[in-house]
Amino acid sequence: MTVSVIIAAYNVGNLIDRAIASVRSQTVPDWEIVVVDDASSDGTAEHVAALAAAEPRIRLVRQPVNRGPSAARNRGIAEAHGEWVAVLDADDAWRPQRLERLLHYASVTASDFVADDLVLFDDGIQQEAGAAFDLPREITPLNPEALFSEENPLRLGLMKPLMRKALLDRTGLRYEESLRSAEDFLLYAEILFSGAPSVLVREPMYVYTTRVGRVSRKKAAGSRSVTSAQSLLWIGETVRTRYAARITPAIDAGLKRWRRMAMVRWTASEITRLRRSRDLGGLVTFLLRHPGSAVHYAATSRTWARLVGKGEPA
Image 1 (cartoon, rainbow, N blue to C red):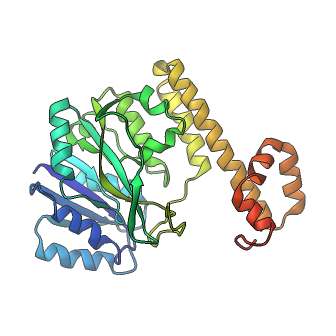
Image 2 (tube, rainbow, N blue to C red; image 1 turned 180 degrees about the vertical axis):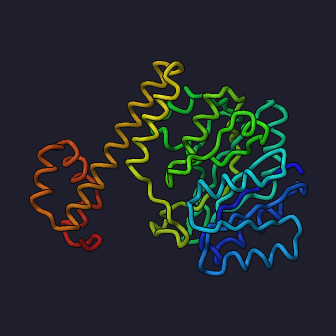
Image 3 (spheres, rainbow, N blue to C red; image 1 turned 90 degrees about the horizontal axis):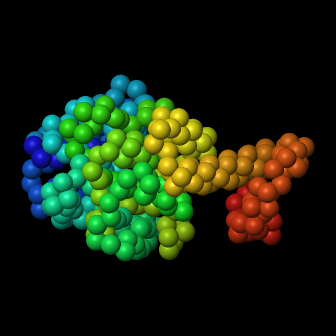
């Protein structure tokens, strides 16, 4: 078995067919799909079981209780028979040559971790809307410095790599099950800190359904992802603590940008929470303690839209 495709599934019975069909359309036939149903209540497991009955390369694994995407992916990795592991989200898809091309790049670069650019998909209009990264080179080597040199380091957390199973087994690295957001980024950072040869290639072959459409500005039907500011802060501190001896000036600068980004998200979420709860006293106190955050929040277009009555209800 060459590639095990891990799909974590929770109440995606109306979405998962596209993801599975895109794997079945791959030009490389030596794959298996491991769907880990995370205690769905909408018939997802039964639907996948029916697909598996007709296609022996599809396997269904059921979680007894809902434990989140990290635990589901870890279960899938444990069940995988392939030399390589690839993660596919249930509302995403692959272009037909993706596995063939990634395996090629893995071979020519002798890499254990290889990712491609993303094709952004606008669910609101059911159309592709450009690439995510717009990479300048055909092949970009990845290491911790490259990851944290990004102006927004979280951006590369969107990658959906092909990972050598032997690498994951040798290092024992897995998704952090306490996280339900940004868990991908932490795993990738730890893989890069492990020294695994890794590359990012310019070809966009993973069709990534954005939470909000780039063109339509509509929320995707299957999107449940909400980035937790607390999770981002925890990830930053965890990386700094676990890899203290490997923190170069470039990585340190990236971690500081990471913390600033997380703090902006945290203060925005706090202001929104206080505003919606109509806790005027708490809101005023918070704004006085964090005046910079107040300015940043007020400068956003969504805030001004609310002020003139065109935004979402309070």
